[in-house]
Image (cartoon, rainbow, N blue to C red):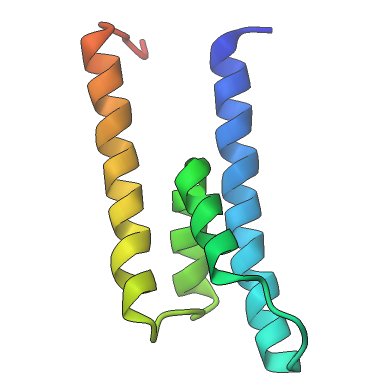
Length: 96
């Protein structure tokens, strides 16, 4: 299997997981049941799910009152985008 397809699949899956985790945790918060730990939400963002986690945070209006989520989720996203651009630049990778 092509490595680009593998990486793309991983990114899609982990971002869907990040988005879903925000929605599930919001639902659990409303229901008053056991919650997803905040560390888990951040780990999902750190392993590549920052786009889905950030979109889920604002879409579900979940954790938007916590300054550390509002600051660090987009920061993780920006740092990951910069990292991908830097890697592509240094290895002379071209998308087309």
